[in-house]
Image (cartoon, rainbow, N blue to C red; front, side, top):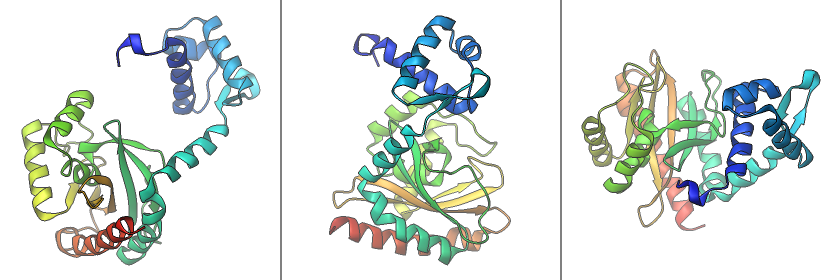
Length: 253
């Protein structure tokens, strides 16, 4: 965004909040050093954020993100109409698949997890609500990209690039577009350890009646359990059935 359209003071406050979140708390000196700000500037921002209850000061002069953000996050998630509609179906998908099921949406060219449901066998991953990922590294992200106009996909790539997360990540634009074409043709996307080593995933986009992607759902599990017969046959059929139910509910809610 052009600097002429931004308020630098607000930007600094947000960067401080993001740093506190990433570090799990930080002191004034650490924040100043990492963000290249003076200690006095950091102190003023923290005092303002503390007064508004967006951060709080713990022991040892360490500041933390406040729970007031939780209320905002919960409200933001509920504004996505797909969340309430898809939630019970994501839970059913986890139970039927015996793995982890997820719901992801696109915002500002990144993928954001809205919800996950675990089966009794699900592996412990970082896919908590609010977690951001690059769209090209996940089956859900690729399912969404496959349903966006090519120009929009190019804009996302230009903005965020195609960073490599594992040796299996697609980092070539032409190869990615070939993958997206195949995804669009068969109706589901696959991720073979493209974001995390040892993790495979099958996903499909959830679209509104006009074909606009509202998000994507997936089943994820360890490579040792998701062999080709399950990854390419059993799970796609299962996930497409859930997709159909969610899209019908979205269309007629």
